Structure formats: C-alpha cells, structure tokens
Length: 562
Image (cartoon, rainbow, N blue to C red; front, top):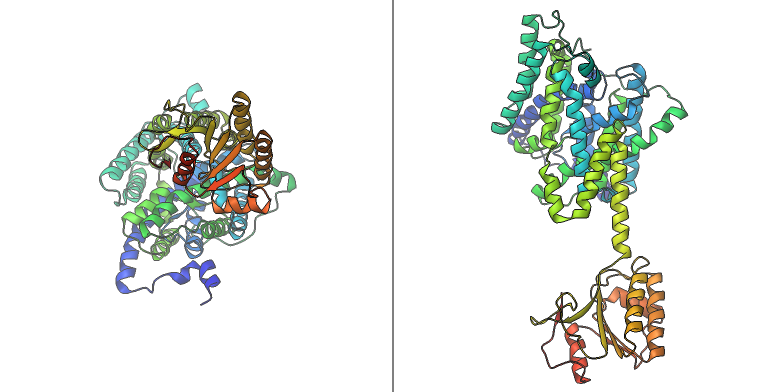
C-alpha cells in the first residue's frame, strides 16, 4: 500500500479486528456513548442550538474524525468551550435557536472545518505554538466561569438570565431541586466511579420524575419534543458577504481554541501509545468532522478531554470504540429521543456545570506565579479581558496571544549575554554574578545564549562595543560560541563589522566551540579568513590551554561552559 495513502487514511493502519478486541471496544464505546447522549443535548442548549443538533453533532462528525485523524481514541463531538464560543460569536447577530442562528452556526462549522483542513494539508500544525500554556489556561478558566454563570439561573430554577433573576426573581422550587441534586450526584459519581454512566441514569431518572410529578404542567421548563430520524445532509442558506465578514474573527478563534482542546487530549493519547503525535493529520480529521457536522445541520465539534479520558479509562485501544459510541448515539436518536422530552432544563444546565467545574483550577495561577511572574501577569490579564469582553470572548485569547508574542520578541531582542569567569568548580560562569576574576588580564570573555540573528545581533554588537569603549586596553576578546546555534545575514554583517573593529584596534578574537552550521555560513561570507588576529578552537578546554601558553591565564584545569 502506498505510504501517502496510509498517511491520509489513518484507518487503514488499524489492527485487524478480532472477537476479543471488538468486545473490549464495544464496552468502551457503550460507556462513552451513554455519557455523550445527555451531554450533547446540554451543550447544544449552551450553543443556543436546538437540542437535537447536539445528537446530530455526535454521530457523523465522530465517525469522520476517527477515520481521518491520527489520534484514534479521542471522543469527538460537542464540547462546552466550543459551544460557548459559538454562542458568544453569534450573540447580537441572531436570536438563539432561530433559523438564522442555526444557519450562522452551521456556517461557523463549515468555515472552521475548511480552515482546519487547509492548515493540515499545508502542514501548519506549528501554529498551535502561537498560544502558550498560560494563555490557554487563563482563557479556559475564564470561559469556565462564564459557562457556569450562564447556566446557574436555569440550574437554580430561575426564569431568564442574571438580569431577570436579579430584577424580578422567580424561583421555581422543583427545578432548583432537580438542578442541585443533579450536580451533587454527578460530582460524587465522577469522584468515586468515573466509568459509571451517571449522566444518562440521572437524565432518565429526572425524565421519569418530571413526567410522574407533572413538572411541565406546574410551570417547569423541559427539553420538549425532539425530532426523530436521521439528519439530512444539505448546504445551509447563503447568509450574505456582510454576515460572513462578521464571522471571520470568530472562525479564527474557534479554529485555534477547538484544536488546542484536541491537542490536550491527543498528546495524552500519543504518550500512552509511545507514538509521535501527527498534529497535521489531526487538523485534517478534526476539520472534516466540523464539515460533516455543518452538513448535518449541527454546530462545530471538538475533542472532549473528559470523554476522551473516559474512553481511555474504559480500555479503548482503537477507533472501533468511537464507532460503537456513535452507534449508541444513533440508536438513541432513532429510539429513545421521546424519553428526553420530559427532562427538566435545570438538569441539562446542571450537566454542563458539573462538566465544567473541573476546568476551574485557581491554584494554577499561584503555581505559574512561582515559575514565571511575567507569564503569570499575562495569564491574569487574559483572564480579566475574557470576562470583561464577554460575550466577545475572542478578545481574551487574542490579547493573550499579543502579550505573549510581545514578551517573546522582547526576550529575543534582549538575549542573555554574560562575561564569563572560571568558577572554583571548574566551570565557566557569570563573572559578575559569582564575583569571579577575569579569565586573564586585558581579556574580555563572553558568552551569548541565543542565536546570532537579526533580533539578537544588535544587542551583541552593543555589548561588545560598550565593553571595548570602557576598557581600551583590551587585548583579547574570547567568544564562547557553543550556545550560538544559528546565524542569519544580519548576524553575519554585525560579526564582520565587529571583527573589523577588533582588527583596527589590534585586538585578537578567539572563538571557542563554534557550531558547524554557524561556521559554514561565516566561511561562505568570508568572515573567517586565517589571521594572526583570529584564532579558533573546537573546545573550551582547548581555548583555555592556548591562553595558558600565552601566559594569559593561571595554570588551572580545563573548564566546561554551562
């Protein structure tokens, strides 16, 4: 079989099914499928979509994703974070649940899917690195706060949103009881028996109680009648160029954030299998899943970390488990949707709250403060902006990205350049930090822990020039070049300018441990012509030995740069 075919059709690499394998995968698929049914309905409500579209988003998209993704054991379907982003993106453009809202949500799914497929085919998976871990952590926690806040009124039995709840509170006691009990039961089950299908059992029990007690007749809000049967595959109506233009920024953010959700699960799966994660192929698979969801009349999907973890916990080994879970959801759509009619809305809200509570980890900010205070500040600002900018949540992640990239550029423009001295332990360390004497009289020994490129070259030139200006008697400049692993045209130009400056002064330049790629570029530029004023050494020990022969250093042991 052609290697390219196996790459773009990962399901061809699945192991041949056996009776034992299929039995194991069926049990895992049943576990995930039973959890997915009520969750998908709840997340559809969160996205402002008709409840049945959550089930639609759990069948065909899940099958497409598992067939074309390299990560076979991820559970793809509706997720809380993606659902919130969809609702936030469409707020103000249409009324939640209206045909126009559904049309725009479908277009979001199609556009994000097409973008992910294009990025995967172009092997642009490295774009994941634009959002670092602190920014994603802060954005996720802020989104979790907003999700919980949006669901609390319904979970506690209040009609309308927070504004209505505060202005004219109208508590519905039975609904509040359904919501609170559901959260308590789900959190207890998650702690003591993660594989137990508590979500489905709670939903069925709540539906039975709701029907028996006449919950809807006494003013309680329920899911209502859901259509049965398979969704039709069709393109949505054209919304117009102006409306599509307003979806561009949300499409970019949903594409990025939803795939970061996938990455968090895929990395765990790859580590457990001991394989390299093919992020580009997963981009293609996830993108095709979103397209399939849009064509099904549903909304953008993603990989659920909690369901994927449950899939692994249940013993799933291949993509067959996802196929079985999709069949379970399909069976529920065809047979059991009437049972969901009497489920209280408070129960669905409680399911979302219970699932999202695990995303709240305030201790992560404290841990980050101990590790890197600048990044902790960036994370805190991202968190605040996400909350303040709601419902336009994308400003939070965009602000975090800009701040992180700005800090990255600042660090690149200010590389670590130190004057080294010989430490008593035999290593070369920061002379001023450790209060060490110079390596030798009239000698300036330095090390730059960065690439000699356009970002760092200016600071390198400035550091050397300032030292030479302050110490005109400098006879030797020693560059410990081992950390310099790359050089560009700007770096070559500045190196040659500095070397010329040293030649004019009659100062000898010693270069220690230069790496071959850097040396090749400098030789191609004619910057390393043999000269009495240019001496090169392969190791730091060789450099120090040569200086000792010149009488420039005390007789000491060879040192290794650290």
